[in-house]
Image (cartoon, rainbow, N blue to C red; front, top):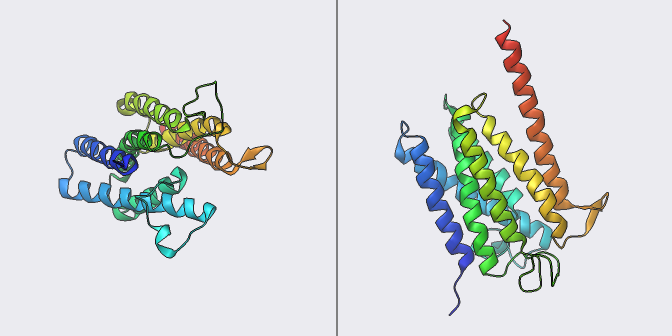
Length: 227
């Protein structure tokens, strides 16, 4: 009997992430919070699928939105998910706080979802019959799942001690970008620039963007404190 662990674990991750997101924003309307998560996760999955199809081709137009099938690119999901979240809550006074809590809980949700990739034997790394190999391939799905879980606990510990609202989103992008840069050395993708594949270049751009924004935020806070 075939079980679509891909859909099962991403759904489970979304439920766990939603519960945590609501608990971290108790003063907000639960209806609005659920809508936040539903639309951001749905559009994020579609974005991840669109990114995958753009790089791998499509047999028909439905392939672009068939996110329940195997074949997602995380970076597409991150961009689309954050964009729809920002658009929905752009007028909220506590938007930076909401972005922090949403991105934190999404990391946990994505970590759980990646386990489904492994169980469905989807998105494996390069062939290898020794180092960390499962089914004679490097299990980059489990490596990413573990990296996301570590990021989640590190950022959760920072939650009450962040320098300013909105900081955690960029911290997550830095950590995730660096983690993916390392993990994707084991991904079966052609080199594009300086012996790096497209996934590594995007990962680096995420990390660099996060570093720039955090550096700007620290300078701005320091300048304000001297006024």
